[in-house]
Image (tube, rainbow, N blue to C red; front, side, top):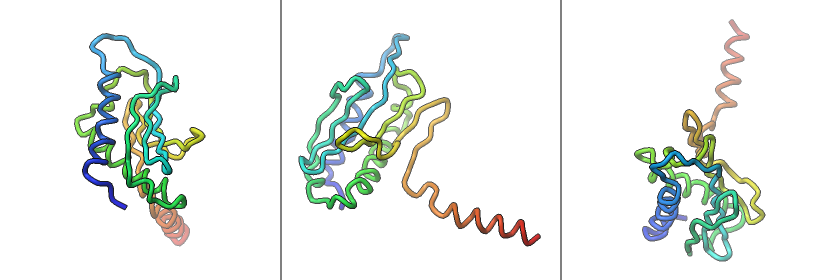
Length: 148
């Protein structure tokens, strides 16, 4: 299910709130990760830090229609797209936060579902499909090695 333009913009605005709160011209770094907690039944997205401080709380009405079986798969793709769009110039990589830090998709119990963005010395975007087909490629590689 696709998000409406306004829902996609709301997610990006929530990410901008992070950059506004955690961008500092001073050398005062904080230690935190960012947790994106979608609430399907309520149709909301909470963004919180390590201290359980709410950074954003936005409505995403389309999420109410998702079935529980596909919800996190769909939301992972949507949030990854929003993070990529909002990070085009590295804004999310230059926060005044101690490295490593991450953007993590969590469930209602705050258990990790997926790492959406990990910022360290190098940045790794974790995307669904990033390792798709890896098993087949490795099996073919090993088979070719054994046949030679």
